[in-house]
Length: 502
Image (cartoon, rainbow, N blue to C red; front, side, top):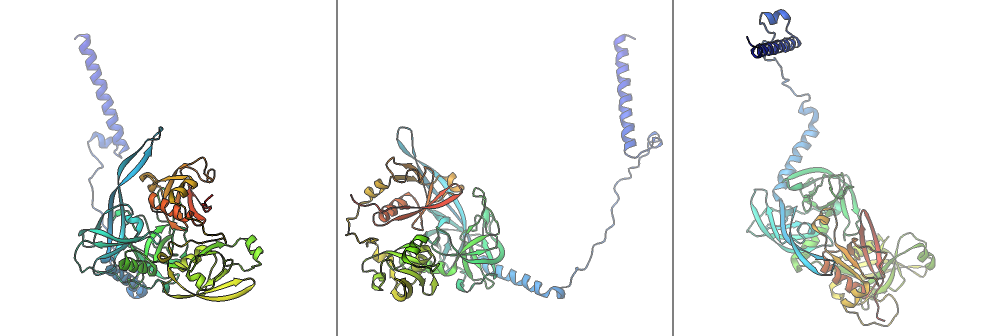
């Protein structure tokens, strides 16, 4: 036998011994004894089925939880009655972004944008109520109804200040609408249901309570309802309903500490149904909303002004100027009057008074309680329509009338340039317009920064760059103008002085 063959036999023997040793060790670890291994017996007898007994009775009888059983049944009934009128909204469009290179050349780059939200059918003819921000800038709108059918829709009109849009389904009805409830009768603690399509998941229902009323936001012309019903991205535009299945609000926004990835925090907000209904009626009647108008320039009272006038009350706003021949002047209001109540409601800020005026019915009479030179008076004024006085100039001083400046002159004097937010910025919560340049001669240099977002002018939300520039030029030509600025997580206001001729 040669040496090579002998070494091979030795290796095979070593391998067999090692394999056998491993085999024996694993069997012992598996519970087999050495005798079991030698006689090839195994403790593995295969799987034996387990016996089990399930409980065949509930822990409680329905008689013990009658109230909860009734609530459970009634909640399901509310959902069955509500869901068929709620629609899912998908939008798409093209946004043109302007870019400028190092040499000052500009070009436009189109990009496709898509959006998603909810809505509610409110008429048999197929009118759908949703938020303005759901369909803003996206001309192609597709609605998915409860039965799964898909329809295109057209925009009848919008009101950005209230964040309401009215759509019309491009198909013949009749459709199944929901009834409007009276939001003025809702009370804190009432049970409500939020219906919509969060994150595009389709029909979803959450319940909660009215947590608070009259929540104010700087970019909203109406005070909102606060609810604990879960509202997430995609719920916007869907209805908030009461226990009768009536619309008492249109879900509009959520509170979240994470602006990049907003989600449910137990705090959601809805536009009261009364404000939404009135806005819709105005749009259907005229194609736009009407705003109540008295014709005053107003200023909040600071401690210095209160001391100067000898006015010691906590509430009130000062009349800083009047539009000639306006309802305010006809009612007998004067410059430096301090308005303390409007139709019995306390007035604690200019924003509060402007909201009350704008949402008063045109032609209605309102009472104004004022403080003038140490004495209290009550005046009666008739609400006018803002559009009828759009060309009038508010004069805060007794200066002679000045020639109105053209928009280009006004914008050049202010010296800020803006662009619309990019899709990425919008995802991160940037709204309105973004400052792209500030001229070296601008008085705002140092106060505003490139990248700041301007969200509102005089408490009205900015829609796009054209809207911003037109409204800024019109306002700054005749009065001081207030801007709402967002800089990162910080929001603040800044006032631009009126641009005057030299």
